[in-house]
Every structure is written in structure tokens, then in C-alpha cells.
Amino acid sequence: MNTREARLGAIILCGGGSVRMGQDKALIDWGGARAVDRVAALARAAGAEAVLTAGRDYGLDWVPDPRDGAGPVGGVLAGVAALRARGCERALVLAVDAPTLTLEDLAPLLAAETGAAFEVSPVPMVLSLGAVPEAALPGWPLRRLVERAGLAVLPCPEEARARLLGANTPEERDRLRP
Image (cartoon, rainbow, N blue to C red; front, side, top):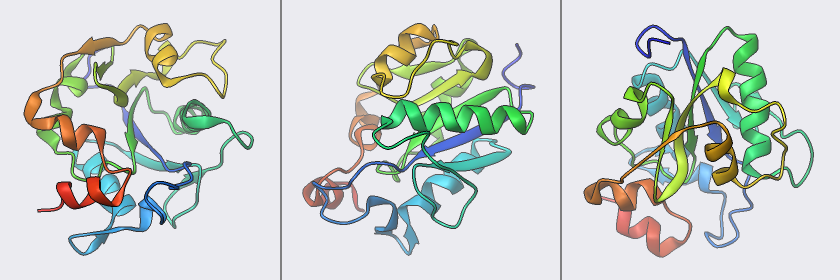
């Protein structure tokens, strides 16, 4: 599949409890925009035709988790089904707690023919919707999905590491803010 011609959709994982942050990470203000809106804008800039939030409804296109406790793979699977119905062939999976990612950070993933994730974290990832295993289950660890979908695991550029890992605590948020 030519990655430049394959229709790209995006899934923003928003289902976590935000316990360590102490507030909903999707709603945190990052330079005048909610985190979820910054991540959605990045997905669109990366070429995503459809952008979905998985786990919670924030006023964007939304898919609910298949069941409580489905974990991030549950959100990915719900998003994959919705993107397939929209004619997408690849998915860019992003986490709402990483709103400082850049297009440059995502470029190696988007260029990978088979899809890819970085070695330091399974999200962000790009995957072919056809590579999602039929046996994939909500509750799987994300790394199992990366492995079973045959994604390339790429080295993480050191300058992107903190942005890729995102902000799960107020201290991490403060370090990522300009």
C-alpha cells in the first residue's frame, strides 16, 4: 500500500482516569486550546481525513469504548471499526496527554510502509487497518497490538522523547509547557 495514497484517519485515546494529573487531561489548556483540540489539529495537519476521540465525548467525532475497562486497545478497536466505515485504510493513534507532539515527531511513523510505533511508547502509532488482528481484544496491552499487527518499532529521537511520553502529572505538564 502506498502510504501517500492510503486514506488516513486518526484515533485520539481519551479514556484514562487522569488520576495522577488530578484533572481531565483532555481539557487542560495548552496555549489557549484544550489538549484534545491540539491533538486533533495535529492529526489533521498529518493528513487525517477523519479524527475521532475514543473513550470520552469532547464535542468532536467520538466512539465509545466497547465496555468499561476496555483499556486503550479497546479504544483503538472501536476507532478502527469507525474509521473502516468511513473508508480509511490507515490510522494514526495519538494520546490526548501528548499535546506537544509535532509533525516532525510523527514523520517517521507516517512514512513507515507497514505502520510503526516508537520503542519508548506504543502511542503514537500508525497502523494499517487491515493489519489489526481479528483476535485483538479490548484489554490487550498496546505493545501486544503493535507486535501482532506487525508494526515496525523505531528508535525514538532523543529530542522528541518527552513530547512522545506526554504529561501524566502536573510536573510533567509544567516541563512540557513552553
